[in-house]
Image: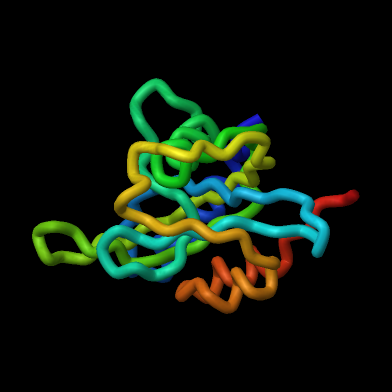
Length: 158
């Protein structure tokens, strides 16, 4: 099941109120995770433009379900494959700098991705770094406060 209409409308209404009536553009992100010897880890990647630590994310493409778009972004940006959750676990807002020099407000829906395979080569390999981190360390590296909370609170039963 995708995001319920009521939940989605609540999110949109809240964001419109925050932005003074201008709806945000919707992006999707994968939250890659795995169980490791030291516990639960999530993977962050660097953005191509500023080098800041982020989740693999991007624009949904026509004909794709939102969780499918998130899984595609994880493959393109980080070479990750696995099982993606069909329901978002949360969302966050950020300002995306556009080529025009303007900033677009974006709401990013986050879908957990249990990583089962990691490619040695992938489409954006030379443009990004990737790193496995504890949820606490990952939360401290991202810039967006809501994303940091989402990552810091992320837990998977063993």
